[in-house]
Picture 1 (cartoon, helix red, strand yellow):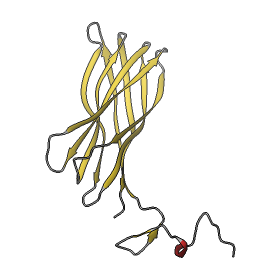
Picture 2 (picture 1 turned 30 degrees about the vertical axis):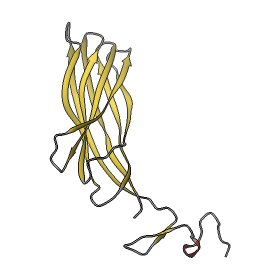
Picture 3 (picture 1 turned 180 degrees about the horizontal axis):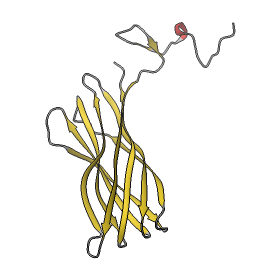
Picture 4 (picture 1 turned 90 degrees about the horizontal axis):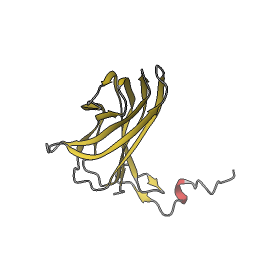
Length: 182
């Protein structure tokens, strides 16, 4: 039997850490916690008229809860990957503003983590065009240990032209916590 040096046998791992609960050795000391949730919004028709080129919402798209109680989180990344479908009656030049909030179990008011703008330029009317949404929110300071829910909201939509635009969004919001080895 030939040994593959890239994947050493269990007994050959010299720089590993002993896991306290199972007695299992791992060459890598970090573990992860991963949570995922599907969400959607729409379809919603928004009519932009003279003087009203900005529509304000506080519409949740998706939320995910992650429990990091009793662990030392090294890194936390919240990720949204989805599809935005836009159907226009005229050409559209829109900006959608999304905000990520955090609500922790210790009952603090929700905290704004970050906002992102997504620009859409569709030059053809009466056609549905799909756009990929991909937002990553690395969380550096984590003064909210324990059970937290992260919520991605659509805050506003602005458009440069008059007309009616139909928006729908669906996708996954995930939380990935890299936990320091104990």
